[in-house]
Image (cartoon, rainbow, N blue to C red; front, side, top):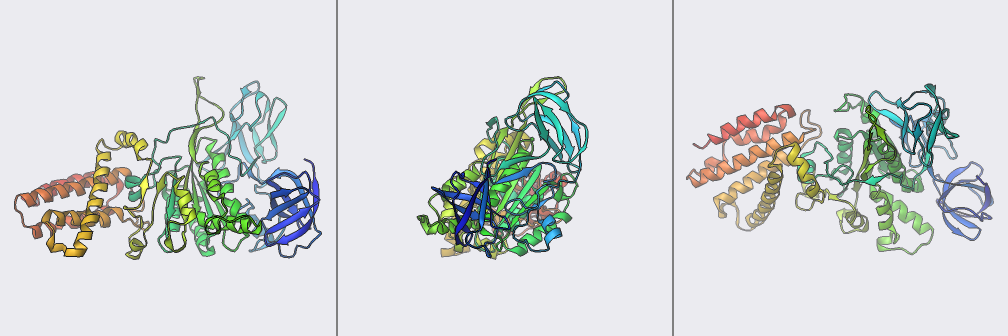
Length: 586
């Protein structure tokens, strides 16, 4: 690449202006100063370029050199990504600590992937095979449960002239395709979405193990959900819970501008946790991108794009990837600070006018897709390889005001809203998800899956649940005015059932040995028993049974204790409780 060299003429916080740099490209990376601080060109005016620096600019002086080779900000992709911990521009934090200490020193340049470690590469093609971009040429056992699939790079196709079998570093040549030497290492610009053949309809639920999400407000595999909430409502806990228990092949967790102690908890807890699906260490399917609040603000702005690029890379292998971002508000604050430094015209609340566009660029990289390349079965026919990226993003609106720009811009794009309620959090109800304000736009496309894979009436049960919660909310407003004794007995039963649902179904402890993860089958049977109890209570009232006897019975406590039942035993417990309920008021 052609080298272009200029000189620093202005320094303003994380922003540097260099002159004599004509011919530079927008969004090209640059090395600033004698220490070679990493930056990105974000504005060009004749031979002057404005550069956002991803490191601390203190100590820079006017006249220091600036180098750019026209290469955009990229991430390294290949074996070694899983179990790794990076900062916002994919610098390996563990390697930096081993070399430079606990704090990142300026100008530290360490490759994202280990160049010395050798990986066992096993080819799946042979000499003479004709391949196209995206085809799998070999596999690497990166972790005990995850197979890293090495594919033909984008823009390359042709005949396999050579293919190797053995142990290699990521920089060694493992194949030659029509004169192109293929390595296990790839690079990709973080702001460019990785290509695919086509996007697919979102018709499969993203299983989280949390009842309020899976049953009431589900998100589809390849969908997007936003989790806005005020301070103390449990956003970070929800993100970490989904990273631990969700049914995804790969987890990419982006800690964007959050407090250091929260990220420390992630770093210390994740290696100790066991993947509930594979029984392996949770870190073996996880990539952490950590950019805490005291780290350079420009790197925070890049961190979510770094995370989604790595997620797309594993998606292209045919994996289902979950990307957790905590939080988008801190990312937007970084964008606002950079925009202010460039003296751009501010929009609402000081955010740049293109805030919604940048958020759209990020969220639209979610989806379930047909990957490039072919999958050939043992019988020779060609099948499609399908992968997905599901994005769950926390939002921290100041003062819990959901009308602020980041929340509103996200709501225009995301398919599910998991709105966190401060009052629920203060009552120690977690997850503190408001069943009044939350919604999911994916339920229509997911109804067929629920009917086929659970029970035929599961969708009707969900609609009945939403209707009962809405009716109970209206009744509670009446009770606030006239008192509980002034309403009809049937309405008192409805309010009591709402309390059972809130306490015994919607509330869920992530620290519970049994209830931390709840299968959809268990969710169905729990709710089914509750509504059988509801119907029998109303029938007993019609038969003249006293209301106090209906509301005070031993079976009610058993409904609240269903959370203690193991997932695999719930059906039998549901049948036993049903028999007991049918005879309780005879």
